[in-house]
Image (cartoon, rainbow, N blue to C red; front, top):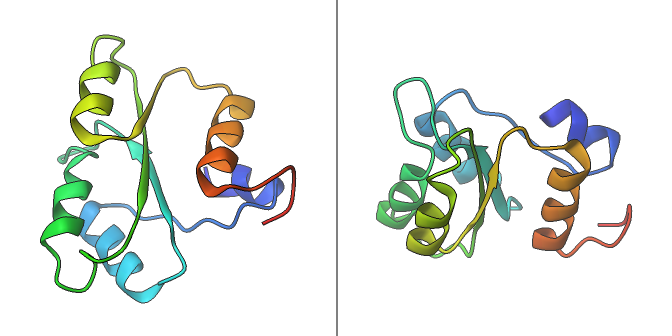
Length: 111
């Protein structure tokens, strides 16, 4: 996903686990949005919301969240419970980019 976002001038960093994502968030204070899968190898993507809230260094951040899921029955439940955007796979690249730009308040290619 980071390569796709680079092509449309949306800066992005990747993480292979929720703990690495927290480390990245702590070191990269400009990050305003987290986008990830709902189902990760041994973790649940939406758990990042509580982990951020429980972190002394991250709890004050006003982060936005976008999750992607292959389960068409879960999006509404996740979005309502967590107040975030949930897209059902397969997610078209243009749809993802549009949502990210809206959430980041980016018009066209500007940041």
